[in-house]
Length: 182
Image: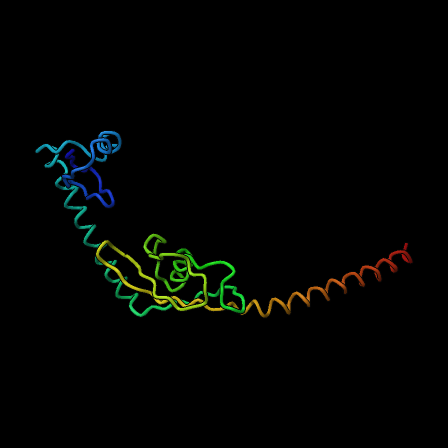
């Protein structure tokens, strides 16, 4: 089924494109929601200005993505994670974790743009592919390192136990003092 797009639809086309789609997709989704119409001369003329604007916006977006790709060359991010002695993470590092680490460097990406076959589960350095557009890709080096809080956390727990004992001792002393005041 051939339809004329009234709005830009990702992975299908921009305003004014004549696309060939499955009959059910066009009849049940695109036409009822006003996303497409029949490709007549009048409809094409009516959408010509919207197509020109969409092409300008598309070229601006492409220029921004190319600038982002240039900024991302040789980018390395470090993600701290808790791991055992063998270097196996207690959790895993996902595309969301990588996107958050890149955001700290003012590189804002969607998690869908980070192509990770499977979550990272070991302390390691990994080259991760990033797809900014269908034909524009780059790579980011991700360092997964041991979180130093693991070692300090064990010491902190001992300190907490001592403070709890001190608190108990303090309540006993205050309990004695309260009974004499009353």
